[in-house]
Length: 186
Image (cartoon, rainbow, N blue to C red; front, side, top):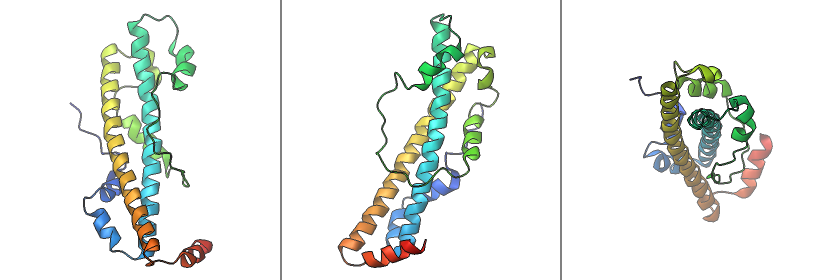
């Protein structure tokens, strides 16, 4: 049995998910709370990007297994438009957040996803045994569940930080004019 992969997002996400993170953050100065919110947003974007990569590979592996089980004579390449169209996938479960940042170092996330199926070259999927494909599907599905849980946790941190910022403005602890002046400098 291979060792469990490093959790998605690594130490940066681990820090955000610490149980006391939000408590500690609310005691910070306004500029630091805004910085922490931006950091959480960046990590959420990174996790979302990684999840999309992972889901694409999982969809391909599952469809190849289905193709084989149904003795479908079409090649996987012929099925790619169907696989990639998200036909059959349920509704999105995202929170409809407007993203203002892009994934940082996407090659790292692709490497992480590729590392989930060591010894299983998905680019040569037709050469793989059913057993290897099933193993890859299990590894990808488990990683997707773990990643999604971590992503939800980061989203909760983002919401907590946004609520703290809102509270400070509402209670008069922060000044909108100062925020606009600060944003104008960046």
